[in-house]
Length: 400
Image (cartoon, rainbow, N blue to C red; front, side):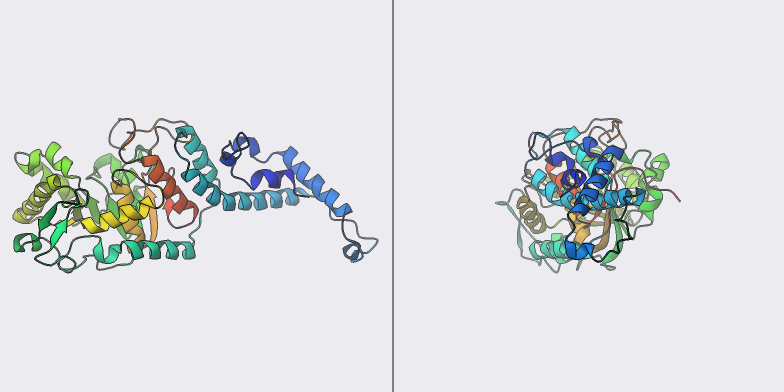
């Protein structure tokens, strides 16, 4: 007879409420009473032991007694079973995210955190192969002279009916080939900008990575570096930042050059060919760096890569108008790296301990809703974590 504990723990908590696909895990945590029930059921089960098996015991040998170690084994077995089923339950949940609250998500994350994480090489290889088949970041992630020759009429990512002819003056802005010479990188960090990074002390761990991706020119100097690190190999730039913060590189060009100097010799990645409005601004960044003989090199997202990537995630339920930069870069990292860890990915207004969290680690704004359809994206990232494809850092980092 299956024990009550087994029955409860074989299903993730949030699949049980109201007898359907959702529920709370607190009710199911191990208690002495539940453990006693399991032990008693195990004792009852011995009364039904087949005669052939009973004859293997001598008359003087007592039936095995339930001990504390039995309880511990029960706990271990049921935790393993729960964590195994969590993966399947999360996939089901991902398809029904509409109407679920922030607290529901936080309960799922609590369940996930109770499960030990370890990399799953086969899952990783399979997912990476699917990404490579659809999108091939290694060859097509950024525009290069190899994948975009002179004379190409390049379609924009979002305004796909609009094209830009690639003439010599544009062609010479592109690197000859993909510039990631040390591919594949062993350990990569993708650093989001979530307020969850505040007081995380993750900076040292991030800086030990072989390749560090960052998004949208975040601050990395001063006190924040202990939480977010300072090493940067690639940082994305939203063209709107150039317009709003740096005055389209006119009167605030010096400030821009001062700010990007903090990233060392990192690549600066811009979506020049996503919208026509992005093109001029992105080219201006390129020319500003060239004229200033800056250490940083400008790269442009390939619009075809981004279109194919959006189709890939659409098949998994991410139907947003446009993917977030975080999901784009995470996808790239899975193809370019052997091990990927995500920091600062937290689209919620509070922690699992109910502590308020700002939208970014560098401001006090509450999280935004909409546009990037973040919960849908986040549920996909949670699945990658549960499957052992990448690791999400949910809380503070361990400091040696």
